[in-house]
Amino acid sequence: MTHPLLPGSRVTHIGQHWATGSTTPEGTAEVLEVGGPYPDSSYEYRVRATRDFSRRPGPDNPMDREVWWSSRAVRPACPR
Image (cartoon, rainbow, N blue to C red):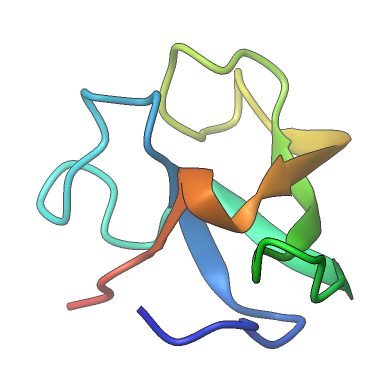
């Protein structure tokens, strides 16, 4: 994967095993800011993510929480 991802990129966290290209093609978070590179070649992304990490985005689970995710823990979304 190419890093850093650009702000506005849609991503999914690797810990969200249920989130696949077919179940969440638009991802579960949006990159807002990029930090790094760090000595180990990684980056950090400040993302706007869903309120409940274990559920897909929707009206009852808005993307309104900001958190930092490691570049080693994200994968780009695959919009259809």
